[in-house]
Image 1 (cartoon, rainbow, N blue to C red):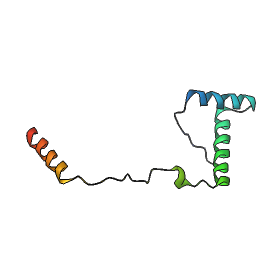
Image 2 (cartoon, helix red, strand yellow; image 1 turned 135 degrees about the vertical axis):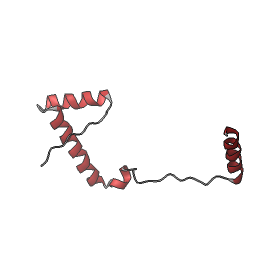
Image 3 (tube, rainbow, N blue to C red; image 1 turned 45 degrees about the vertical axis):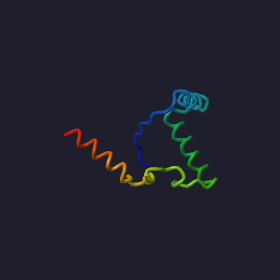
Image 4 (cartoon, one colour; image 1 turned 90 degrees about the vertical axis):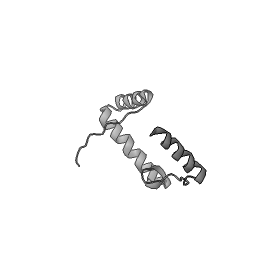
Length: 82
């Protein structure tokens, strides 16, 4: 297994919960975080959550093209700038 560094910003209360969990289970913060993340992914597989349900990187927002009236208004604004 290769070790990698992951820097994430999380809520301070969540960090304290993880820190407390690590302390109770006599683990480092890093080991506890890795363990909890692994458990979360295993649970997601059990309940049938797929990557597509969570990952929104490859989604596109629906956008409608500008109406002729909006195009005319933009041209007018741009013309005034010159």
